[in-house]
Image 1: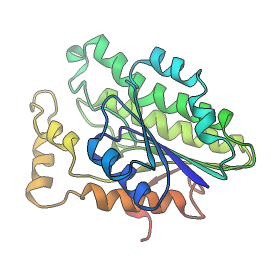
Image 2: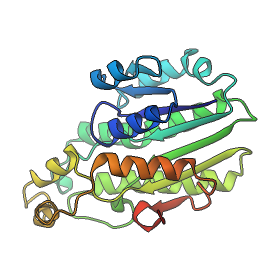
Image 3: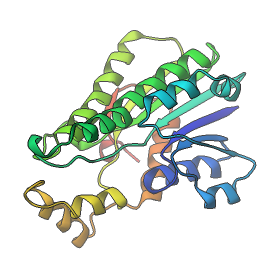
Length: 245
């Protein structure tokens, strides 16, 4: 049986990814600070929600030290991890980045995905088909003013995937995939940034005005197709827009 773990399923792309998996009949263990009442009602038999602040590394460590993850993964033939949860803030040059905000972003964007990836491999059957998808960003590969924390944390996921791929762990495939520009709350956050903090803000306003934002459900379907494809992980980093439909 195939099962999946999805982070940040309460809204946006994470909600769309979880829904897509559930519609395919794949049980989902969803980790987020908030639940998703709609998915919980529609997929009561397939969705298990864990309310967990993934930016709190201590809380995540305690949960990973419990038997919850091994119990969910026991005797499964295929296990999927989609590290979707992430945050954009702080958006500002260095002088405008509060240390606590930097620490929170690094914990959520980097520590949590790396901790979950390691725990998944340790807790899953060695013979299982294990697949890890980091939701990356074009910001991992292109530097943007004001986004030094976000760019650095997404680049960390890319390099993690490259390094893990070199380990050659049997039965493990990993890919850090940039999904493109999606019409989510994060895009609204970007457009709300001041030009002083993020000089490229008008470019993102133009993307909305010109209808160039992808719908979360469309993007989620393509990401899940990519994750389940036989060739997933052949390239540890990729851009969804470059992958043939």
